[in-house]
Image 1: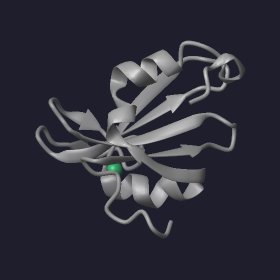
Image 2 (image 1 turned 180 degrees about the horizontal axis):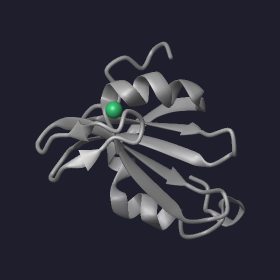
Image 3 (image 1 turned 30 degrees about the vertical axis):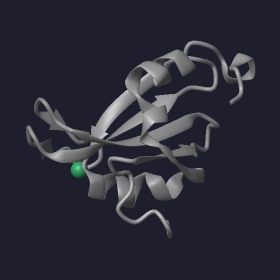
Length: 110
Ligand SMILES: [Zn+2]
């Protein structure tokens, strides 16, 4: 994926679309507890920089996972379509939860 090296970072998150048509937001995070990366099944140590992948389903609802940045770059971001960078302020957990409350057809467009 060209053009997104080093992203997401503090200022920018990424948003793309999965094959199923769901939104996938990729957001920089610092871990506050031990997480297990769904890609390599390795630990993400407390206090380490990593990425949160937050899905917002077309039919409503959300789900998120913690990934190593490198695993997300190699195994996830490249499979998304329409990837664009979005200000990190738009990807706060509360905003994304809110966005997942309704099916995408009924979502307010911004
Ligand atoms: Zn990993």
